[in-house]
Image 1 (cartoon, rainbow, N blue to C red):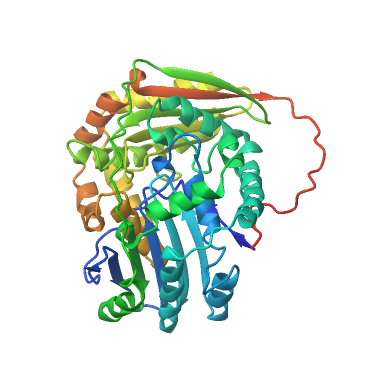
Image 2: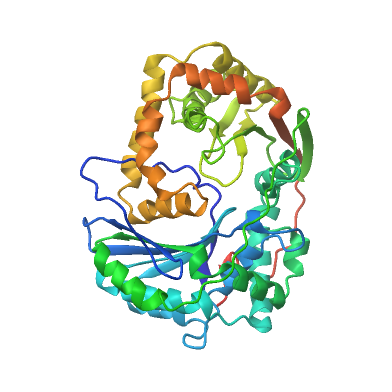
Length: 456
């Protein structure tokens, strides 16, 4: 049994360069596999991650969610290591492992004592090209994924509102589709679909191997050569351009679902680091998000929740690391006696102020300090260090951008924050979804007990 998570919230974790940090070492094998190594000798532990450049944004209609489905099937075994062996071997070596799917990537990882890294490489290299995909295993795993979707989306009014909101906010960008897939597509996966997806995308020249921890780069490269260099590359054709159509006015929808509380989600179309012109706009949007929602002293918490007391919760988010243009998001739940329209007005007031008044130097410095504090905390984790590198590389930005983050954020000025607010936080770029709570009826107890876990 294992838990598979869909990562949709780890898109903007900052990685800051600090004096004395070991540099990332890179090597590309002759078959195209890129290997990145980040030394961190604070504990005798190593994290190994394999990132494939494929996720839900690569999927055509009819098979949405197939990247996530294949993630589940990757634990169903090879001729050398039958189903269940992967996890058993990792556990026998004192490690743990898991996987996740995002819009632009699918990744697999293991955490082990440093002398066990070879175990990870042998297993991952084996399943990169030799996976057994069987119809009977797919049938069983479909039940797991269907249940996972029920738990994560269908039974959660906010998650379901957000899913419909994304489908409205984007017309033809693949970001309109949920990572886990639409129910009808999940119900009709065929083993041939999985085979084709695996053969097309799971190849060394479409993958990045990231290792972070108590290791020496030359030893990691030697092991990578031993286990991965013999794998054949594939002919991988680049995706056709996927350009979102122009938005011609505000978009609104009301979602009626059984729920206890109303809810509001808003999103403005914005560029990301890969598309921003000039590039500083992405960092300015990052700082703007911090001004609104960068801890308890940020504006939304201090003004709308504690100050005016019109919201029980309010947040803002922006992820600058993605393959395609995205949304600057705001969401909130009204306090008792308030409506989603009261909240919409209050949130737009905050946006209006950002467009018309410069952020004070004191507030700007506080936000930047908060970003730095977050980074210091995250750098205690080998996992997140590796994840930053893998994510940047896989979405096409390049891992080298990690070293620029601190300087770029520190260079953001109050004028730049106001400029991106004026340029992008416009009514014609806005989509809004309102959750209209309906009475909650008593439901029969479900007989299923599998939850969000796979049955290996």
